[in-house]
Image 1 (tube, helix red, strand yellow):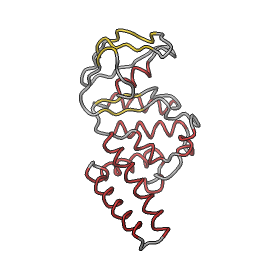
Image 2 (image 1 turned 45 degrees about the vertical axis):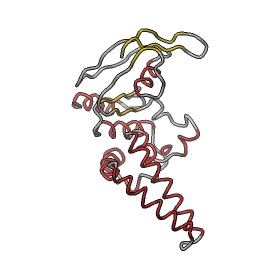
Image 3 (image 1 turned 90 degrees about the vertical axis):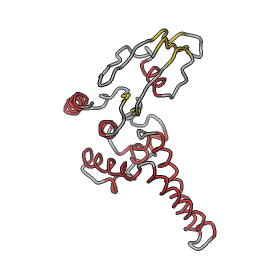
Image 4 (image 1 turned 180 degrees about the horizontal axis):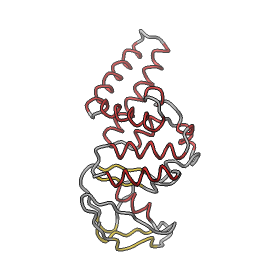
Length: 217
């Protein structure tokens, strides 16, 4: 990152001339008061916000845990999404896109079959679902499901098949955070961006996180 700056819509400069490099194997904490621009800076690194001043370069797969994970009831969508949707939120973009296509194809298939299993619409939906399944497999979806199951057992003591449709709001903030962190720390991404990773974690979970970060390459 070199010479990065960000100006708010009202014209105020949030930060300017930010330059640093994070080397291989480094664990770096970005610390500052509320409103200093930490989350904005991380969003720029993640690609969620455009970098209009300066440059940001990164290499290797990027895993991101965004700030709002764990905040119960922070928006209407968070109250209705499932654990499977949360898992896709922290997955790599290609996997996330394939997973969303698979979910949409499955819903379309159920809707079409409800209107008549032998209809032309049902046949078209079946073909769409088969294509979505193929795409899911091609991007490593079945390997991801193994990871989802491992994390589900580690966090909730239940297999993925019984938790994937569970509403996120039925988990505590700490359980949501632990679920997302387990997925990222057990994943293959070479760079992790964790925004407020210890929020909502109790003392034993904070110690768990410290140990996992130390162990992580």
